[in-house]
Length: 589
Ligand code: DON
Image (cartoon, rainbow, N blue to C red; front, side, top):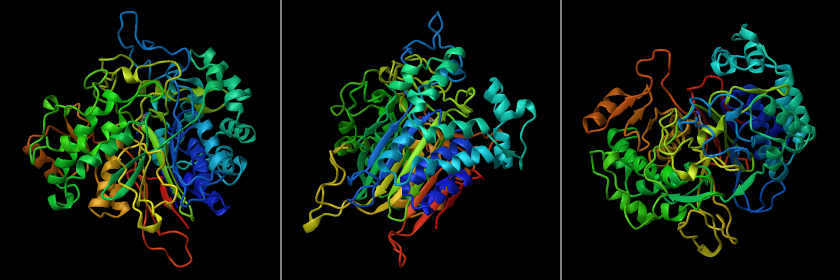
């Protein structure tokens, strides 16, 4: 089963599965296909994370280990980047400098990440898995009304190649038009033939000379120095299940584990049904507390020591829990971190980031191998800049760093030194590809203990088999990613919603600062009113904007049922594609 935000990308993944590919082959096919058919966020000029879980102790692809793998292909700051690069002579943040234009881009990691995944964990060849993307770029795909509208993005209009390719120089594409990208097709063909050329060869030279001519910082040396990092995924536990999730430089996994640790002390269905005021109150208070730690402590782990085990400790969660009032909110301004658990933070209480364009996809193959990947250009169409003549858009991921400590960026973001800009550093992310699985199955009744630490050496002890896969999860949505994934888990595990209902349930979000409980526009108003009456400051997204759907995120989820149909190797698969977007698809065979 393949679930993505674009039907052509879902079909690309299915095509590769039918040709004998495994979940990683399909994920690489989807990753490259989304770069073509969902250019607002799908990319080869950005970066992301991929969580890969083999179904058996035999491993997956060329890799023979039974462990889950986490690929960090996040962008890196170029060598010429510096802590104050987005400040003017008086030390003020230059508006948009880290958002629009060539100087907003980090060194892209997607090509390195996808080709690394294929080489280590795939079963087919890169040429084979890239074929659908190349075909879609060369022959084109048909635009829906929503997609045609997306191509009007104003940041594209500012840059000649973006305006020519995506906006036909003002003669905008319409619904039903076939959108072809011959330059991108050529670039993808060159990557398929020689993946190293993007970082070391002729493609790298072209990217570097484009950057030099357009005020960008990325050099040939930056590209040559880029490396994918395999990191140990974080392992948490919730209601007896294992939560396999994203380590730093994602902030999402540890926040998710903290949220679930706090909630594990409550019987949520007893409080009321899914999205009932009493459940929302408790969940919001868990969100608020986890987010207090979020940006204080988190940044690139290659540049910071992060107290992950302390943050994930059940005793710390219990201390937080005891500060939650039964009905009333705890104002963020009066929230005090329980003493004695964490070392002092480098800097107190910064709020966190929200930004609008990323995409997630989930895949499970016939053997039960699973991939959960979120990747991004950051904003809609990233920096807006298309690398000429290569036909792909570059990210504006530099905005995920703190441009200036203590000063909010365009989104009200203030962050601490852990996420300051430095050469070669990865910006902090909220992207949270996650899986929920049963605990490993061990011989002789041996039960592996509830993971006491978030980074055990091994998720699956040597003598044990990986437990059954239950959920593959993830979403875009900046800081709301974390609460979306938490709500998905709660909806399925605690409230027994089916995966489609969980994907579509209207969302709520709280991130400590601002101290506002946010709701999607479709959220039932009586529920919002009840929470308001109990003391929350509430906000309905885009309440007064008739044109906006007032949603965030985009769930692309898979649930594995315990039922194994006759002749099948794995449990029945159910896809949940977020109906907030009208061109995506969950499909299997
Ligand atoms: O890595 C991050 O957290 C952000 N660059 C993600 C941006 C995002 O999710 C926007 N999506 N709608």
